Image (cartoon, rainbow, N blue to C red):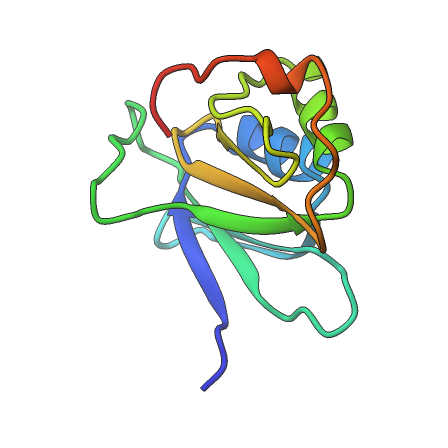
Length: 141
């Protein structure tokens, strides 16, 4: 068995691409517009060698309101080379760090559509560092 992708419906495709590509560092693999069905599919990937898993962003053109976040979807998880640098880039881009990486190992944020994203330090945890080690949790993730 091979994991192929996870699909997320997004209300604002530009905001979702800004979050996942510009801030988180994923890259767009392919995009298809479906005029008849009035939707766009955008497949994102890490670009890392041997990592074929993707996220499929589905943008329904006629969606009039943001989607509600269902309880059946948990989160997306990404291993990152430097959790502090990743969280700093996200925070500087206006993203709230909901569960800061106080332990040098794990953090949680949400996409513009409320999708929970877990960030895990690749390899051993980094040494605790400020401002993260004293930063409280915010909201839910």
